Structure formats: structure tokens, C-alpha cells
Amino acid sequence: MSDKFQAVVIGGGPGGYVCAIRLAQLGLKTACIESRGSLGGTCLNVGCIPSKNLLNLSENYHKAQNFSKLGIEVGEVKLNLQKMMKNKEKAVTVLTKGVEFLFKKNKVAYFKGTGSFKSADKISILDDQKKETIIETEKTVISTGSVAVSLPGIEFDEKIIVSSTGALTLQSVPKKMVVVGGGYIGLEMGSVWSRLGAEVHVVEFLDHITPGMDREIASEFMKILKKQGINFHMQTKVEGITKNTNGASVSTSDKDGKKLNFDCDVVLISVGRKPNTNNLNLEAIGVELDEKKRIITNKSFQTNVSNVYAIGDVIDGPMLAHKAEDEGIAVAENIAGQSGHVNYDIIPGVVYTTPEVASIGKTEEQLKEANTKYKIGKFSFMANSRAKAIDEAEGFVKILADEKTDKILGAHLIGPHAGELIGEIGVAMEFGASAEDIARTCHAHPTFSEAVKEAALSVDKRAIHS
Image (tube, rainbow, N blue to C red; front, side, top):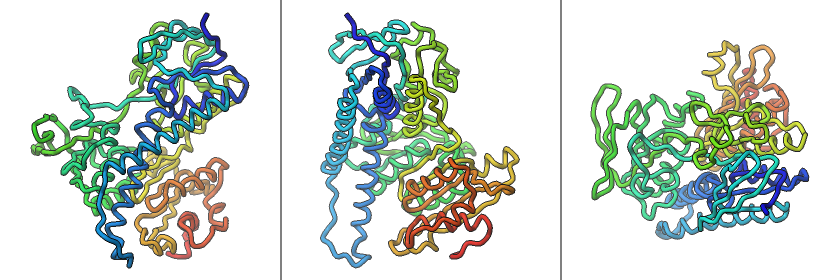
């Protein structure tokens, strides 16, 4: 006899485990299937969390090297990469075990193995010993995330040619690293290894980094990263990667056809991710996919098979953990007969380099394309007391507001703690606030958040400190 559940979630990443917990909270007998052997998905195991740990540790290492300039006399600063990696692994273990505890607390059944469809109401689970378990379900939510994309004909070995997963587990600091792709992940990992001592070269096919980001912010971001020692090769195409006894050779050509080869120890390929749907046996039940192999859903996250739903990286939209989490809660509430929804116009994006970069809502380019008339308010961290006091004054806050109504349409930040500051603007946008609303809200002094207030004041050309 197979176990029977009211809801089964395939995938225990940020979207999947949150969905399973919410389903259980709403009174449904729920199971979650995860193939990795630990919960949290890519984000918790080999993505967001370990990368942020290394970003923090590498920044501390960089700061410690310069303590004497600040009047803090210390001995020789040495890098112990093995200890640093153990610290990262500890953080991951604590958090993944924490999710397991939440499953127990909320009475979510947890199955370790690869889930696939036998039929629309029967799920096969194959564990690492190839033992099969079959469970029955009334509703199924697919939340299997995404996998890194390589270049045509080039495979990851996760030692010399690496994805973000391999870049998080290098056993020594490469002398030279080539990063293919100037997006969020490539720049975060590139900055980690640059601060730890690697010579980093970023090869980008476009004429700007961080595609989709506000171009003014992207331009300022690249200037700062260049000052930090990262080398950029824009409008440059990778034509081939060949492994050799010393590492690899990356063959490229620029927009004028000039050939340039990079000999390096490690190549990080960071050119995007694709939905992880291969092992689900979707064809057995007829779930429809689009041209990018994403699962097609309606506004309730329901597929063309009425009792099967999908969320996160396997469906349309930004591949972000917090987007998946919100969808996980929304789909759980929909399944339980409530009215869950996600506001896709107000999903923040953050790059956790130093300084951080954060974005929410519309960019200038999008507003121009839509012929929306807007006002700009900008404020530099150079004029922010807290940022100056701790010598982290690079960057600025930029707020875009409707020309007539003053409603906030978007905001783009580069500077200290930008990823935290964007939250205030997100709340304001969710409630339809104007720039004036933020400008008239008292902000503590001295704080970084005052830069947000001043940018809001600047929309009406009345910033006080610039």
C-alpha cells in the first residue's frame, strides 16, 4: 500500500520547502521530495548562502589587510582557505538542518530521492540505492529549480571548468581566473576570488554588465569593480575553451574580430541557468512546456494538468529564491482555497558584492520604452554621514517616480547595505507610495537609509545634503 497525501511538493529548495510548510500549516497532509540529500535546494546548498558566506569572509580578509591604514595595528594577515571553506560548510549545514526541523515541527513528510510522475496522482521516488517508493497525491507542486548552463560543446568538470557550484569549492586560490559572463553570479564569485588574490578577467558578449539592470547603475558598478582590480573584456565572444596541463586556455574574439587567448587556472562559466525538468517524466502526464523548456502555468500556478502546479525556476520569471518563496506560499494558499498572489512588478534583485547593488521596479530604459514620463531623484553616499564615517561612501541611490502622480516606479542602488535598503522602497511601492511619502518619513541619523530619504527629496529637487 502506498502512502496517500493531499499535497506533494517535488523539490525542497526555497520555493518547495516553503510551499510544503505553508500547505501543512493550512491543514493539508503534505510530503516533500528532494533528490539532493539535504533540503534548501541550490540556494542553500551551493548558491545564495555559501556564496554570501564567502563574499563576507573574503571582504573581511580584504579589510584586515588594510587595518593598519585605519590605526588598527595587527600582525601579518594570512589566508587559511581550508578553514574558510569549513566555515562556509558549517553555515550551510546549520541552515539545512534547520529546514529539516521545520518539516518535523509542521509534520511535513520528507522523502529523499528523485521524484517523477507515474501518473497525475502517483509519484515515484527513487532513492540513491535505486529503491523505488510510490506515493499517491491529490495535488502536486513542481519546484525542482534550475541548473547551470554551459557553452555549446563545453562540459563542467567543476575543477578547471566550473559552474558557480565548483567556484564555491576550489581548494586553492587560482592565480588567474576567467569569468565568462558579466551577470550577478559571475561578478559575485569573481569578486570573492579577486579579493583572495586571483587575477580575474570577465569576458562579456554585451557592451555592459548585469543585463537587465538600470544602465547607469551598471556603468557605475563596472567602474567600481575595475578600481578593485577586476579586468573586463566587453563585446567579446568566447569561441572555445581547451584544457591543458596548467589549467585552460580561453579563445575569444572582440567586436572587431581581434583574437585574444587567455591562459588561466580556472574558467567560471556563468551564462545563465535552465529549468531542471529532465527527470520528472512530464511527458507521461502531458504537462506542457514552452520553447525554453519552462513549465507553462496560469495565474494560479496551475499547469494544463488540473491537479499539477509549478513554481520557481521551472516557470517564467526571474530565477530568484525570494520569487520562488513567494510563489510557494501563493500556490499553497490557492490549493487550500484561498487567494494567493505574487506582485511581479515589485521583486527586488540584489548583487552581494562590495558595494552591494540592488534594484526594484522599472529601469529608466523600460520607462523610456513604454513612453512613461518620469522624474529622477539621486543622492550620493559621498554625502551620507554614516557612509563617510565608516569609509564606505561609493555609489548612490536613484529613485524613479511618475512625473504627474509622484508614485514610485522603480529604485536602483549601489552602495553599502543596498540589499537591505531596497526593502523600504519595496514596502513603499507595494502600498502605492509616492517619493514624497518617503521624503516625509523620519529616518534615523546617522544611517545609510537617510540616502534613500534624500533621493526621495531629490525627486522634487529639494535634497538637503547635496
